[in-house]
Image 1 (tube, protein in one colour):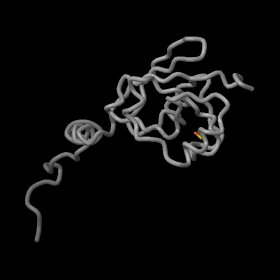
Image 2: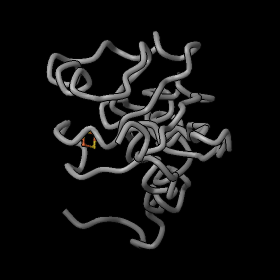
Image 3: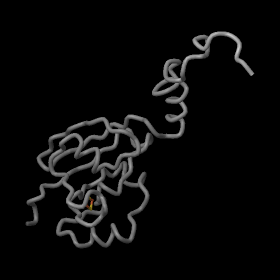
Image 4: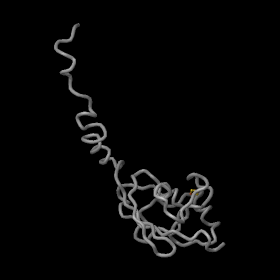
Length: 144
Ligand code: FES
């Protein structure tokens, strides 16, 4: 069956209607809690605060590395085997994360400097609810 009318009269693709990266599609993704900017403040061992914007779904470690935050490192790429991403989560935020897995807790227990709010930042996923998160970083040479 032949189509009537010119093909150029078809509705433009979603991307041109603002429904691709933006528009309804973006609103739907934001509603599901992805594609949100999440502000995270890292306070280093000398008290310097750096606030960055990350994307929900990233780990705190990934956000730190992407923004060259000092005192957060990774040897294992986030597979929870190196503990170089150790951070202290601010008390107001600590309870908002799921508890540490057995693997993370086991790795944390091996650290020389361990605080009640210690976490491995590669295991902390950012979500829209984490906007404003504060974490403290540690001098990697402390306790060495
Ligand atoms: S990056 Fe290696 S344990 Fe977190």
